[in-house]
Structure formats: C-alpha cells, structure tokens
Length: 515
Figure 1 (spheres, rainbow, N blue to C red):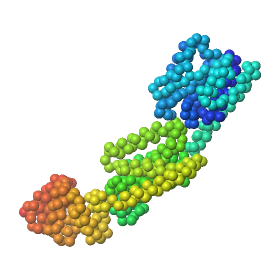
Figure 2: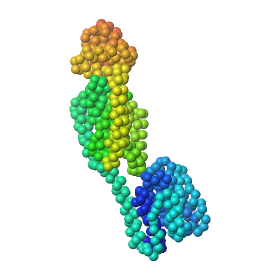
Figure 3: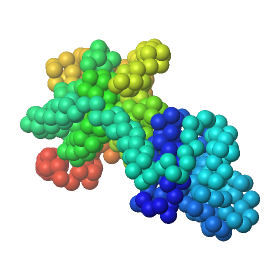
Figure 4: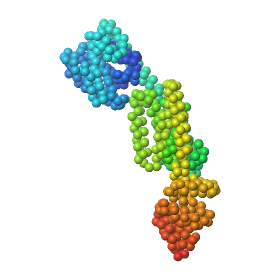
C-alpha cells in the first residue's frame, strides 16, 4: 500500500469498515481485488441494510456522477439477490478532498428501479466535521480518532486492514456453522428403509399392485377409518413404481440431508416424521384415493427451510432462498397440472414441516415463547383436522374404486357378507358406482342368484359402458339363462373393449357353437 494513497485516508477507510463490522454487525459481501471497494450488509440496520465504502481520492465531480450510476446498477443486483423489496444503500467515499468542482448533485439520493443510493463523502481534510456528519447520517456513533499522518505508517494500516478482514471472516464462519450442526444420519436411514420396502414389495406382488400397496401400509382411507392409525405414518416409506422411488430418494438425498445438517439429527427426525404424518392427513381429508410415497415428508423439508428463512432471512436468501421457493412453486404447479399426483399430501407435508420446525426451532437459537406458541397451535390444528377427517370420511367421501377395493379385500378374506353389506349401502347412496355394482354382481353370481347378478351387471354397464369385465360376466349370465343372442352381443362388446383377453374370445366361440 503505497504512500501516494495516503496512510490517513487508508486508516479512515479500514477503521470505518472495522467499526461497522464489530459494533453494528455489518459483514462483507463484496470486496474488489485491490481491496479499495467494499460492500457491507447487515440484518439489523433497517435504514441502511447495505453500505458501500470506496477508497478513492476524488478530483472531478464528473467521475463521481459516473460512479454513482455504477453503484446504482450494482446495488440493484444485490437487492434482487438478497432482499427483493426496495432498499436504501449508503455509499461512502473516503477521500483526501471533496471534488474540486460542483458536486452538490451527489448530496441528493439517486434511484434506479427499487434501489436508492445516498452518497456521503468522508473527506480527511475536514475529518472532524465529516465524521460528525457521517454519525448523523448513520444515527450511530463511530469512535474514530483523528490521527495525524506522521503517526501512521504502512504497518499500522496493514494491521488495521487485517483486523477488519478477520472480523468479517469470523462472521462468515459463524454463518457457516449454522449449516453444519450435524452430519446426515436419519436421511440415509430413511433412504435405506424405503429401498428395502420397495424390494420386498416387488417380490410380493409388485409395487404398483393395489393389494400389495395396502398390505405394506399405503394410505387407504377405509382402513384408517376402521382404526389403522399407523397408516398416517407408514406411507412415507412405501412407493408406487421405480420412478416414484427414484425421484423421492434423490429428493430426500439432496433436501433431507441439508435440513438434517441445519436442524441436527433429533430435530430432523421429528420434522420428517411429523411432515409425513401431515402429508397423509392432508391426503386423507381431501381425497379417498389410495396413495403412498415420501413426497409429503420431503415437502416438509421444504417447509423447514422456509422456517429457517424466517429466523435467518438474509442468510436464507443469500444461500438458498430463491432456489427453495422456485422448487416449491414448480412442484406444486406440476402437481396441479398432472393427474395422479397427490397435491393435498404435498401441501399438508409443506405446512407440517414448517410447523414442526417452529416447534423444535433451530439449534443454539432457542425461542421458548415462539416454540410454545407453535406447539399449542400445531396440536390444536392437528386435533381439528383429525376430527374433520374422521367425521367426513363416510361412504359418500369414499370413491367407487376405493369401495370396490375394500370389498374385494373382504372377499379375499372370505368375508363376503361384510363385502355385500358395505357395497349395498354404497350403491344405495351413490348414483355412480359401476365397480361396486360389478362386484355385487360377482357375489350374486357366486351365490347362484343369476337374476340378481344380471340386474347388477346391467346397472354397472349402464353407468360405465366401457367396463369390459361387466360385459363379459353379463354374457356368462345370459349363457346360464339360455339367452345366447344377448350373450353373443355382450361377449362381442367385451372383445371390442379389450381384444387381448383370450377368455373373451373363447367365450364367444362357445356361444357361437351353441347358436
């Protein structure tokens, strides 16, 4: 650092940086290669959240005007990255003199889009007055001594510079520790469990088989209503098909591991499990369809990151904020536009993860009053939603497909009477129940009540003419009744709807032989 730059000016520059860092919690966010321009940012200063200092001996106001324009451009970039909302930036020039010509324009704030820059010239030749004015602008005292040039040398300035930089590095390291509270452990445990469960499912009927999914713990509203409460938790380790498993495993590896590093192992375990429960609860309330997957719990990790953003807003926006918010929006939009995705589970998980994070809060940053409020609010909300879900998941809330699956489960367990009871009740209360009517037809056919079976099959076809199984079974009924012309018509319809079924073709040939 040469003498031509002026040791006194350098001293004032670095001492201002150091005091802003140590006393008022500013941290360096941008430093030029020659260390002559530094941008500082603070979470606590609302009037000037960003301060820019530049060590430059001003000569003509023309240069100052161009530099103010450049500062506005750079300030707008920083605003977009860290703040999003409008900000005011204080730009401090540390110079031996003020510009020699008219620079009154610089005393007025300059604006560009949502960024406003206030310019201040800390002139060494008028140091006591300049410092007093700067303190007035900052509304904060600065204890900078007016040292004489002969009392300063390169070594003292370098030592001061090192102290200022060290303070900023210390703040950066403290921020980094927020992301390093523990190494991921439960993330990998959950990944291993869901892969193991998937393999077991593949060897026991397949992960896309409804019966297998139910047996391994998928969300199945009728069983939850009957008391299988554990199905609020088990779906988070059950996946439907390899692609579903692959996507959720990859997402858990990336997002879950980051959340576990931030919150620590025990907190992450609570957040993940509660978010998985909340996702299933949301799905239970909104849709009766069979569902499974870790998506709700993974969205809960997003919710935990959003809570982190409330506790550390600037750090969140600097490190991951934009990416997290964009990913949440993309996933939700995708869920609403693509069929077969349980968006209610995603939203439930997102809210659940946020609430769970509020209950446990962040390591080394306790806020007992807020945590208690989150705990009470979460408990009340959970109770209300559970009551609502169980009170409204009656037969009208369960769709035809789900009811048919439940009835088939009873039949497989040789509980035909129970299957018939729930199906009769369902078809009496719902005008659109072709699958339930079809299974009732099967039960009647099996009980050799042929006429009743015919009625059920005909009603099923009336409600869903595309139900090829009903056409086939109705053809069998007509054969039993000796009505071969009607049987042929139904068999032909079944073949038209599903030409690959050999049993349909075989039945048609049998009917034609009879004719």
